Length: 118
Length: 143
Ligand SMILES: Nc1ncnc2c1ncn2[C@@H]1O[C@H](COP(=O)(O)OP(=O)(O)OP(=O)(O)O)[C@@H](O)[C@H]1O
Ligand SMILES: [Mg+2]
Image (cartoon, rainbow over all chains, first blue to last red; front, side, top):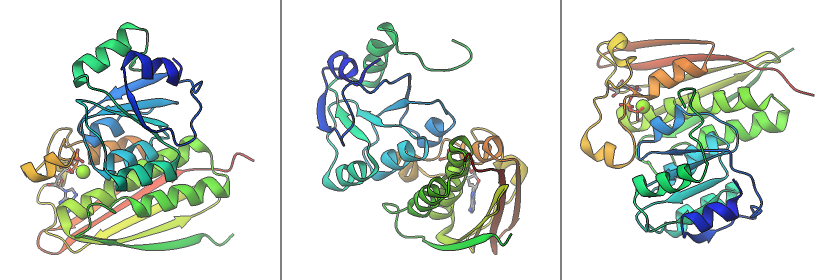
């Protein structure tokens, strides 16, 4: 699923695109507020949905080679987080949807979780 | 061939910058041309151990040895130590207080993740003295 589609499905505000192309293909997603839960998940070209608004959400994405984070429940990150994300080439989105709804919308449009059980 | 050896001081009172050392190691390994899957596993394992040192042990020291066929990491702290290492290794086991959970940690997944992503790990911990965690990941250069 292209980044542009994700933005549309989540009706997301782009906080910073960090030079990521709107055509960037995202293959799987992971939703969690607990970073070690997210770190248990490794799939190429994944994205993170989270309500966690501190620099560690960006670091977690960095370690996982994720290029996009969507903050749920309308959360807007502060300058420090934005700077870190720009530096690492990670796009930041903010969506008004709550975690369950945000994940459900993406899933129903075909974005998978990348787990073996699916 | 001589390994490249790097050491990092991990400050214990700085949650915001926790993970910086792991980010640096990741960037360096990438630059050196190590296989991206191995680099990711090394970065995640070191990041988990680095965060643990910050949230459970007031910081410490990280040493990274980069060999042509593997990367070895040792993270050592002078924190409270782990009473029952076998228990701490179980998924979901955490002593993190609510403040730490609010920061996104305390799922009890860090040590299990390290086990999953490394080829070898050892924990030596003495209550009241500190914890030393050793990790090895086999890694080679792609080019
Ligand atoms: N460096 C350390 N010093 C003291 N105790 C530690 C250290 N590392 C881990 N522990 C203990 O082991 C437990 C399990 O660690 P683990 O990393 O698996 O989970 P966590 O840090 O509590 O949560 P998560 O990693 O999911 O955010 C911790 O809750 C803590 O009690
Ligand atoms: Mg941990």
